[in-house]
Length: 207
Image (cartoon, rainbow, N blue to C red; front, side):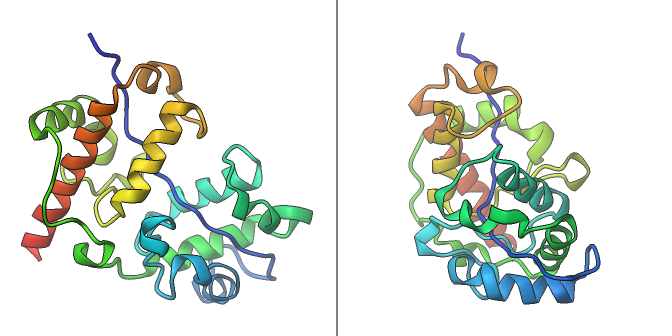
């Protein structure tokens, strides 16, 4: 039997220290435009064909946790290293940027370049998703803010694939790293990515 594993999606973001009140979205916008928009887009829509994820409309608690992980070196990414040197990002800055991004309108499914043709074993993808992912990410892939679980829909397929690979290879930390990702097969990863793309198509049809 293949080892069970769980999706976990994350983000890339940088910011510098500003004198702000915790959760101040207006000040968060100033920080974001100065330090983050060049990679993540003027509207938080992501960029570079999905190398940089969309952040607009993502849950505030999740953004805050990922920024703290970058700051504390629990999550590694080369472009982020200089951003967090010399204590330039304080708790109030993180809260401000996260509040600003969470309040932004998320991009439409088409804006994140979801392929028209979906490849992969949808039956296997559904089986794995319902077994390992639905509890945190919901039946529609929209995540659960009360569980600090991010949205998977409206996210770039390229970014999702990279994060799953990082979890599997141990390049990104996960609470259940070995149990869920240690023996994940490549076809399982492809199947889940395909199923998430299917959820994007369903969302697109709804809108």
